[in-house]
Image 1 (tube, helix red, strand yellow):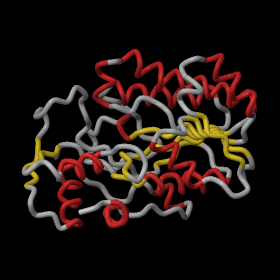
Image 2 (image 1 turned 120 degrees about the horizontal axis):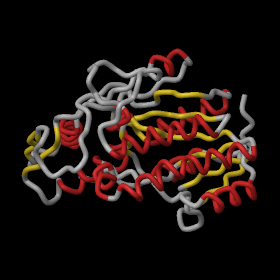
Image 3 (image 1 turned 90 degrees about the vertical axis):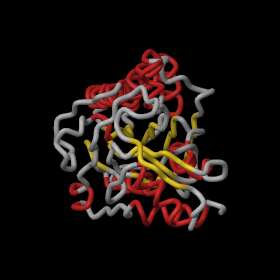
Length: 285
């Protein structure tokens, strides 16, 4: 069991950070740290702040997550994702804290077309995927106590996601184009956070796949959103690889194998169930 008396949430103002804040509390002293308070690319600032707080657990919820933007601004991508992870890893080691680091399915190239296990060799196709892999290696190298949680793409009540973009577009567009060339796992933010907290409480470490059950393309997710909301005024059309204006290459298939998590008795909701629940609670027709 891991002592969870004081938790530091770095990137507390972002979507994932807010999701962590929404599920932490009770007997846990929560210290939210916002981007304006701490730039994770500045090593000395990170070491000083973590040394002042001395948390039991650090939840990493900061970084540059714009996959296409990373191709354009590579300097920012590596500073925020790779270097930030290294600095927080060193800081966590200094105070004996567990570092919880969310990683990505985009560290894989999608060639094998079967779900990726935790031990499968990575081969990222994009700058974003490369920065996440570099961050994983930094965490493994510098944080003796770490929990690396690979996942798909998030949706939920906090921050922006593909689902938010779909909901916005349905009010102004008669035809919506959605990519049908990347199969991955839509994952509800709080499902991910709840699984992460359970792993922390059990004292687990290492690399885990934590993603919504099942898989889908953005096109299939878009169709499901309109089906759940019974929207018939919008036509959804698929976009294939090479269409549109995307700077980053995505793998055709980046589904993660959740067998290890299931064997631990932690079950993720099927993405369709999670999406339906989110839409019925938050979306206005």
